Amino acid sequence: MSSDHEHQHEHSHAHDRSHAHAHGHSHSHGAGAAPGALRKAIVVTAIFMLLELFGGYIANSLALMTDGLHMGADVAAMAFSLFAIWISERPKTARMSFGYYRAEILGALASGLGIWLISGLLVYEAIVRLQNPPAVQGGILLVIATIGLAANLLSMKMLHGSSHGNMNVKAAYLHVLSDALGSLSAVVAGAVIWFTGWHMVDPIITMVAAALMLWSSWGLVREAVNVLMERTPEGIDPERVLHDLATLPGVTEVHDLHIWAVASGRLALSVHIITSQEPEQVISAANHLLEEDHGIIHTTIQVEHPERFSSERCYDCAHAH
Image 1 (cartoon, rainbow, N blue to C red):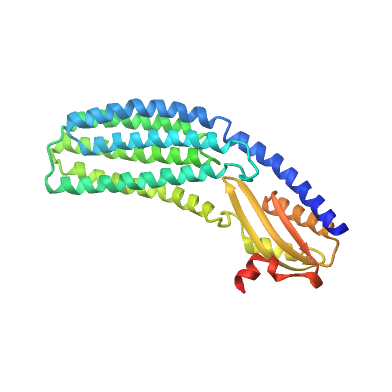
Image 2: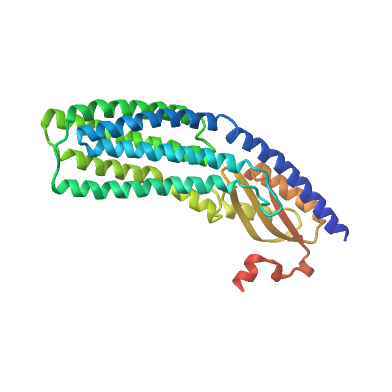
């Protein structure tokens, strides 16, 4: 009975420290400069989206209309990112015990998949145009694409400082980056048509831009899926964590280790440790090791005596059985 009480007390202490750290992290990444940067980028991108769509219609350029449509996707993605940041900062409830932090991951995944959808539609339209390439006014395409590229670079500058550590802002940044690649491709297409009159370059450049969009968004989609699948975050070696915990004094076995991310930078760990030592001492030593050597603060550590260990209370043991 005394051991259980000591275990609960130690875990509660670790949780309090974790909560304080998480609050500071959330404040710096969510409630800081990110929403303001997103709003400014939305305004800039929306203005030049309309310009590119109009210019693409006048010039009859698929590459330019592609860039305009991608800018529209950027606006939608950034607006969704703002919404996801707002949702993720809502307080936790009894049923939503981790809060709404995963909204950030869902928003990033939706943005990445949105880029894939747009890329597929653009490739299809480009293939249709390759069969019968229409005349394109290269001069209009070149001028407007250059202006669009400048707008993309401005939006990227606005978002760059807030894109580290917040997956939603990173998603918006990647949208704008891939759009900048599309604008650059349109500039190249406009220059080729202007100087050579080779209209086939317009759908070819569109396909290149679509491929670049897919490439730039792959890492984001993979990262979001990894978080949702509760994969061990990059930069943490679970085998090393297991080994380090097993070398603590008095520990005879370590199992049922799980390390995951609730959201960007919000790590959590649960583990079972078998030892005949005093539970409070083992938990304290384990928490110190995890924080100092692996940067993990939010932990749930279950200490079990070798003679009273039950595999039924072990997730991995029961799963293996």
